[in-house]
Amino acid sequence: MMQREITCIGCPMGCNLIVQIENGEVVNVSGNSCKIGIDHAKKECTNPTRIVTTTFPVLNGIYPRVAVKTAEAIPKYKIEECMKALKDVAVTAPISRGDILFRNIVQTGINIVATQSVAKK
Image 1 (tube, rainbow, N blue to C red):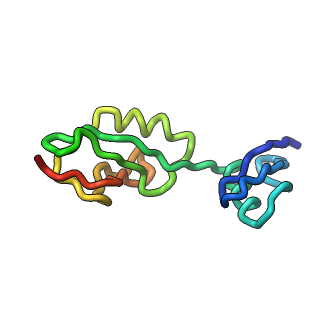
Image 2 (tube, rainbow, N blue to C red):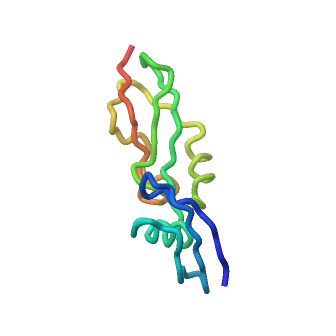
């Protein structure tokens, strides 16, 4: 049996969790103050995902860059591939918050969206 220690980020408590894993499955979680800790531990130890944030250069905008993020969390193992795919992306103003600026990043079905608006110069 394998054991991992992780910090729960499911709520503001930040509980220190001890997760026991057997045959790739979570069999026990301790240290949690609420059910969120159990759910977080199971997801983090079997299928970790993350929201990816970065910026894109903006052509003809009042700001030189626009903040962007994945619309949903992507598998953690795809983050490096995602960043490589976005490395040379530039966009043109105007941009509205929520605009889809890149579709289906690394075949995840998840889009990259603007988190701010940038008006045209």
